[in-house]
Amino acid sequence: MTALPMDAEGQRLLARLADWLPEGAAPAMLVTIWSVQGSTPRGPGARLLCRGGRLLAGTIGGGHLEEEALREAAQCETAAAGGNDAEAAAPTATEVREEADSTGQAARLCRYPLGAQLGQCCGGVVWLHYRLVTPAEARALTQALGHALASGTPLRTVFAGETLAESPQPLPTALIFGAGHVGTALTRVLQPLPWRIVVVDHRPEWADRVRFPPGVEVVCTEPLRLLAAWGWLGALAQQSQMAQRLTAQGRPLPLVPLPAATRALVLTHDHALDRDLTEALLRVPEATADAAQRLAFVGLIGSASKVAVTQQRLRQRGVSEAVLAQLHAPIGLRLPHGQLLGNKLPGQIAISVAAQLLAADQGAL
Image 1 (cartoon, rainbow, N blue to C red):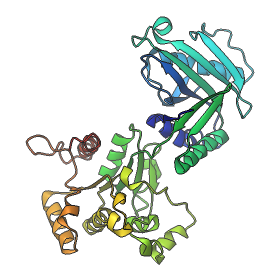
Image 2 (tube, one colour):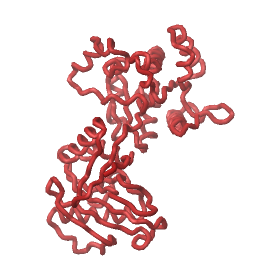
Image 3 (cartoon, rainbow, N blue to C red):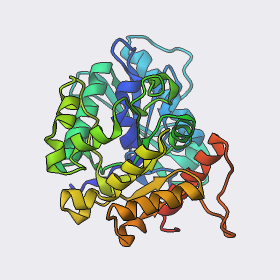
Image 4 (cartoon, one colour):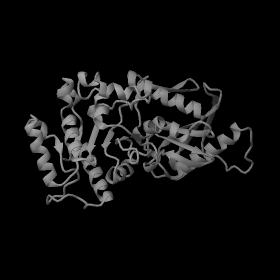
């Protein structure tokens, strides 16, 4: 069967399942839109995770459908535990199928007419798949997603001889260099988006995981060393002692993002480091001898004078005007009269930069 493009928010939820279900956590219900007919709020692959009828993460579109999904999921949990909810409300699903999945857990598929049963104006029909997930199964699902992404094969979920086949795509990556006040605020603004967010800073007191929202990857290392280990500074740099020391530390490297899906933002505490990082990011295609390795967005924080000095230094280092033209600096969305949206407060800058990234994604810059 033809695989559907994977829902981006559903994909992010699967990628982060271990954050919500760490070792020792109680199982939770994973609810997935299996198929739809007619007009519906979300399509196949939209997902939510819940426990005891309470939403943990994700969404299948909100409204009465989501309320019903949470209620049904709670009943599934009760049944899986061998209980019987005598006070359960009458089901609104017009058809219910049930079978044991590959792990031996009971899975359920329910049909919901949105207009007739739930009073939603869109009026289509949604089939929801309910599955109880343990921490071990959460890790297995995340690994299966990673394999599908790396191999270019669909992720398949099977129920009663039917298959939901989804093709994951590399999620947009916000690669933030600098874990200071603006970088932290930016992760909070971007966190609701179905993006991968990676923060890099070599200062342990700033690159502290507790300062960031769930799901943000925080990497405490020298930024240029990480780029070298990723191969973004060229083959010689990747084989250098600088890169080898990072891989020898015993910690797994963050997954190398796809350059074409990467929005890199340079906002460290050090102007010289900002300059070196900006040059390295702009020159990834040159260093890798692959024009297709150009990053989707490279942005630099700073005043107009800092930007002017940085550009002049990069010219002196041989960066061409064509390459410099790819730099967004200073970062932030410009209003029609030319002024940057926001002021100097970290939250304002973060909102302005997030708006700029969204505008760039939609080709509005």
